[in-house]
Structure formats: C-alpha cells, structure tokens
Amino acid sequence: MAARRAGSSLLSRCLLSSRPAAAASPAVSSALRRADGTRGLLPSILQRFSTAAAVEEPISPPVQVNYTQLLIDGKFVDSASGKTFPTLDPRTGEVIAHVAEGDAEDINRAVSAARKAFDEGPWPKMTAYVMLIEIRNLLLQERSRILLRFADLIEKHNDEIAALETWDNGKPYAQAANIEVPMVARLMRYYAGWADKIHGLVVPADGPHHVQVLHEPIGVAGQIIPWNFPLLMFAWKVGPALACGNTVVLKTAEQTPLSALFTSKLLHEAGLPDGVVNVVSGFGPTAGAALASHMDVDKIAFTGSTDTGKIVLELAARSNLKSVTLELGGKSPFIIMDDADIDHAVELAHFALFFNQGQCCCAGSRTFVHERIYDEFVEKAKARALRRVVGDPFKNGVEQGPQIDDEQFNKILRYIKYGVESGANLVTGGDRLGDKGYYIQPTIFSDVQDGMKIAQEEIFGPVQSILKFNDLNEVIKRANASQYGLAAGVFTNNLNTANTLTRALRVGSVWVNCFDVFDAAIPFGGYKQSGIGREKGIDSLKNYLQVKAVVTPIKNAAWL
Image (tube, rainbow, N blue to C red):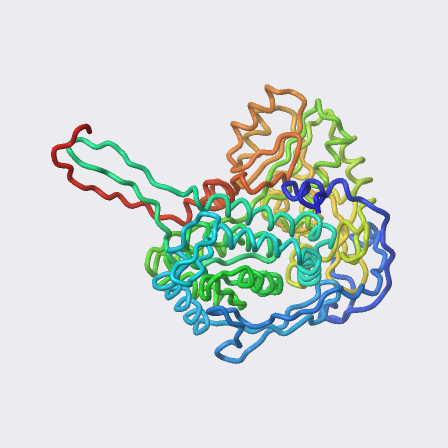
C-alpha cells in the first residue's frame, strides 16, 4: 500500500512499468467488418506497415458486477422507464452488463433528492471538523470524517475497483490498480483536509460598518464525467463539491458506468446521508441535457469534448444561467529542443502521447522536434513504438489495451487515413491489431505539417504526429496556433529556454522535462476552447462556493 500511495500523485510513474509483450489469437468479430464484408478498414497502402499479431483470448476479470441500477436518494433503483443499455467489454465488444438507462424523469427524481438533502438534510449543516459529536442521542459525523472514511474504503476495495475500471474501459489493470485508484483515495483525503479550512473574511469599509464576506455552498451541483478516466473524474468533481457542503447529481458516461456506481455505494457505507450524491447512468442527449438545463440545479461541471461543452454551456445559459465549469479537449504541443537527451526525450514523448491508449485530453499529440535532432528522434521513436506492448489489459506487462468502443476505434482509423492522404509519412503502425476488440497499433507520422487534420484536430488515440522546427520563436508561434490551450510539454536542459517557453505558451499546464504529473493540489484546466475554470487544488473549491457580503452598522465603534 505504501508503494501505491507513493505513486498516486504521478501518472508519469507508468513509465517505469514496461514488461514483456503478450501473444495474440485470430478470433473474428463480425461487428468490426466493413459493410462490403472485407476485414480491412483502411486502404491497402496501410497494410504493408502492419505488425499486427492477434490478441489472446481475454482473461476473465477477477470481479463481479453488483451495481447496475441508478443511485437516487441513497437507494439503487430502476430507471423510471424500466429501460437498460449494455456496457461493453472493449477487449471483445461483448456485453458486460445491462445498466439502468436514466432519462429526464430520472434526472428530476435525482435533483429532487439532492435539493431536499441540501435544503433540509444534515450535510451542509454539518461541522467540517474531524470529530464525532453526540447531541441528544444523535450522532453527527462531520464532512471531513466521512470523506476520510471513504478514502479508507477506496483503499480496502482497491483491486476490485481497478478490475471494474479495466473491464469497462480497457485501460491496463496495473495503471488502474497502482496509480488511478490510489489517486482517488489521495484526492478524497486532500478534500477532507480542506473541509474545515473554507472560511470567509472580515474586511474594512469606509464608515462605521462591520463587513463579513461569507463563502457558502452553491447548492445542487450537476456533474457529467467522461469515459477515459471515469473514476478519477468522479473524484475530481465529487471531492470538492462535498467538501464545500453541496449535494450532487452525477451523470456517468454511457460507455463506463460501473466504477462510479460501485464507489458511490462505498460513499454511503462511509456515512454519507441519503440524497447527497445521486448517480444517473444514461446518454448525453437525454440525461445529460436534462441535467444541464434543469432549473433546480445551481451549478454544472462537465468534462468531455469541446463541441459537447459548448452545448452544455448553452443549455445552462438558456435555463437558469447556472454556473458552469468545463474541462474540454486539447491538442497539446510537446517541444523538444536540440540540447535534449534524445533517448530520454523519445521515452517521455512516447508516454505523453500513448498513455491511456492515447485517450487523454492533455496528450502530447503535437511532438515538435528541433531540426538538428529530428531524423534521429524519428528513428528512435519508431523503435520505441514497435516495442510497445499491446494486448489484454488484465495481463502483466501490457502497456496499451483496446480503445473504448467501435465509434472511437473507427474515428482513430479515419484520422490515420487522413494522415496518409494528406502526405504525412506513416513511419509505423496505421492499422488495427488482431481481429477482435478495439485494438489499434501504436502509430507514428513524421513530416507532419501544421495545416493537416492530424496536427489540428483531437484524435484521442495512439497516433503520434512529429513536426520539425528550427527556431524558438517559430515553435512558440506554431504551438500557440491552436483552438486549444490545455497543456504543453517542454524538453530542454537550458533554464532560459524553459522559462521563455513556460511563459509564452498559452496553456493551463506546462510540464518541463516531465509529463502528466498530477497531484490533488495541482490545478488543471485550459485556455481558449479547452475549458472554463480549474479542477483540483484550491481553485477547484471556488467552483462550488458562492460569495456573500454581509454589512452591519456599528454604533459607537471603538475602532474601525
């Protein structure tokens, strides 16, 4: 457990866990065939780059699915319509479980429960301090203590939660078990620590007045989380909302509902009052739209694509002008200067892009390499991609599992086709891996130009685009020439160069000689069309608080 806890703050620790490759087998999934019956999804030009080996028969996950209903007012219940939808195993495309499909009526039920819990329940009225108080035989468990107990339960059920996350999402089990689940526990302890440190101010004013500035919970928070990091995004959103005394209605991504339902059950086991956290699984146009436009929701937080974020923002504005936090897409530059240790730079750039199957909003998806080292870098990047272990994410040593579903799988392959057709050089990869599930070869393009789709649009997959530059001012201008501004990486041994780049890049996070370093205290969010507001750290608390000024006259004041 100590090792897990030590690794919980750094996703980049994944760099240390490479092991031998998994073998594979040629099972055929007819659902992934083209309409004309052929198995190839791309033109034959790509086939000569294929190094595909088939994937072994999938390992049986060491976990059972016990929670598939909606969680409303402390109880697991069926959807009002009685409908369910399948959640799929991305290793095979087969059904894991059928999950209750919430819609507008279920959102109404969940919001009503959250509103009652906020207006009439004990949660916002609890003291935040870590102690138990018994008043008239009523045991009040403070917010901080409940969050700490929840963190303990997360650790207790670490392996079970990680298995659910891997089964439903396809990410490597080692990544989920050794990094992501411990990060959830770390985040909850972090926010438990903040619960009793949220305070206002007494400020001086002209004239005889006593002025208080209060920070109050905002009320009912609607939260919509994505499928690429479902468990972590649950923690990023629920943690600060609860620490501030709010109640929550959370909509899971339809691709990955299982881990949020399981962990919400643990929250109640930790002592959370009924109605404080409600979880509705369902689809964006129905459940998500109903939540974003609900007149009794005081705040909405969304993580996902920029296009969907714009819809959420519009729905919030058209309804009750509720407060909005958005964490959206990115096309992050990873800039490698000519003074770099090339071997180290190759490894870090590889991690920056391919981590989590490339399904990461802040992925270093535009790799800018100085012209003096460009050719050597490309060759070494190719060699590293060919060594990348792709296979069943439950198998030891696997670095890359399947993409989330057939929609994302086919989208990535279309972008690879665009890259070839636009004249970029396909260095390696470029095709699916095996015939079953949503596996894609690690893919690299060189000679990528700024105007190409693969250099402008978010692919969200294992496709590295390597661009050449020759001047610091040039690369700053090109790196900033994007609609996005989520993150950037800088690789250099020159402190002056690093300082110049960190201040010039218009992004929310800059990692210097590292990448994907996350901690509960580090704020995360973007410039431009990468979002509004910040997740994590002290800044995330501001998303869930209202500011109120209280002014009282003072008579015969001894001092002002």
